[in-house]
Image 1 (cartoon, helix red, strand yellow):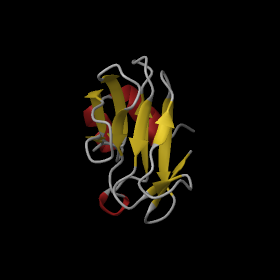
Image 2 (tube, rainbow, N blue to C red):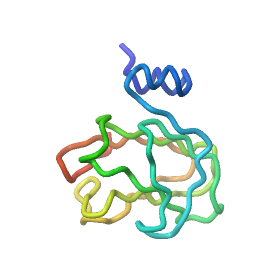
Image 3 (tube, rainbow, N blue to C red):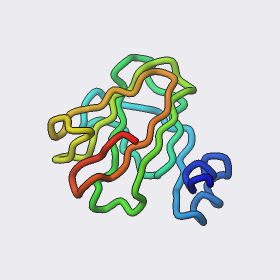
Image 4 (cartoon, helix red, strand yellow):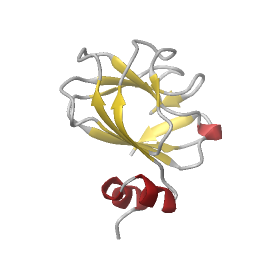
Length: 122
């Protein structure tokens, strides 16, 4: 059976919201650090632009204030890698707190909540 996030990626924002997910399309990655990274607000995100320089950044929402259990990112519409940062004080996949996770060019990924301060790659 398909997961809600998989269905929502094909449905659009209104229907995604009805399934408990939110969707943001047309994201432009930004910045070069955790503090200047584009802050993700939705559970399903499609990055379509940036500065076209490896190192453009995205920032995951803070775990405590984000209701959905996962964040999906599709960057297969751009030709450069992205750095994905956790919110301040959080970590991804056992990396040090505040360290970025590299998302290769032209790929997709899902981050899931593992604890109150840790995201894991699913």
